[in-house]
Image (tube, rainbow, N blue to C red):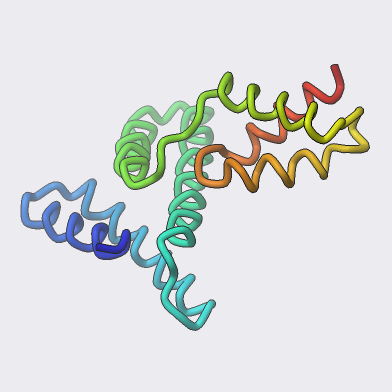
Amino acid sequence: MSLLETLRKDMFSATKDGNTTKADILKMAIAAIKNSELEKGEPLEDKEIVKVLRKEVKKIQDSISQFTTMGRQDLVDRETKQLDVLQEYLPKQMSEEEIKKVVKAKIVELEAEGMKDFGKVMGVVMKELAEQAEGGMVKDIIESLLNA
């Protein structure tokens, strides 16, 4: 069963069970996937669906940050519940320590020295960790290690 089919099945189950929070966020995710399919002109593979879901997660995280700044705990709580639902469908993310180990190994392997080699290291690391690590965290780790 594809990831999109799983999302649809779970959305229908959540609707039937009266779980409007889960049903609503899954509807939004499915709509985002459909929009991406229309742009591409063909159905998305699971790997591409994960990228769409990651974008939706990023939007929700940004909203949580803004609502926290505004002191709107009610909206923070709502967005956090939505975030939890979407993260169920994403591959498990590596910890910062696990990412550091991979980055350190790649820096040694590529004989990278300083920020001039940032692009080379970033490309290799992201290719290896694509589904398991958020790009922003990888970028920060590489920068800190290359500047050390």
